[in-house]
Image (cartoon, rainbow, N blue to C red):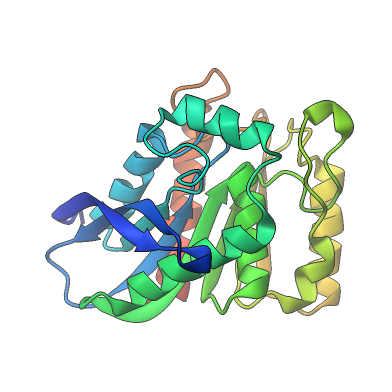
Length: 246
């Protein structure tokens, strides 16, 4: 069933009381719904990720995406804002968690909220979704090929990210991981290390690795897009949310 929805740009009080831009999509024909924080990828707070928010709303979930680059480049295009954020070394982890926490609280305050909130992120957002799930009380966590969860970012990537696999014992909700077999960051070996850490910690999780897919197989505007894989993975996402946010 596809739901009617409304989507709008709002202001959100993020980490340290900073006012940041955010994008909110809500179904308008459901009494009580689960919610999801959408953490955008390194290319930024863009139309592609706003469409993901609307897709969640059309499936009966509130979805809120904070603009993680609001401070570095207010009003800039997604590409320019992402370049500015990358040059600054990326979004600090503590600030990311604070912004996600603010989004969680806003979602819980909505009149149609059932009180349950998940997070999802792709690429850098996948790592950040995992991190948020380890530091905040979330009902479900989705990691779509999150880079540098199990290893530090190598110098040649130009990133400055530390591994967060040691935080696995603190994971607050079930985790769904969606990965491409041909990806390098994260590689199959890195995902196996995360699987082992979560299993050792007794954390509920399920991983799906897709043959013939590499990094960013969800991204409809990039050559890496794999339509059949993306359709199958979207099915896993909605099955997972139906179990965890009902």
